[in-house]
Length: 65
Image 1 (cartoon, one colour):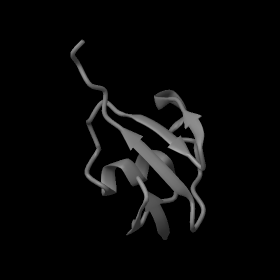
Image 2: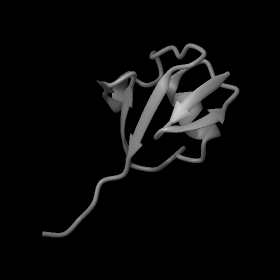
Image 3: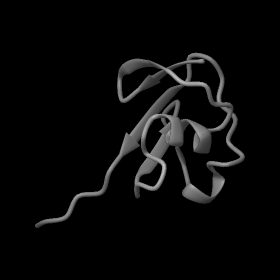
């Protein structure tokens, strides 16, 4: 499946957002996610189906002030 991940084209064999995170190397990472500019909570990732061409935003939290 072709995806756009943080603005960069990528290929991932995944049918859900949770699977895509594992395939893309974010399996256990604490990240915020959006698909096609809509926030997807971590609890909803397993049931969030992806389609060819979806745009994923994967953001890691930062500390500091």
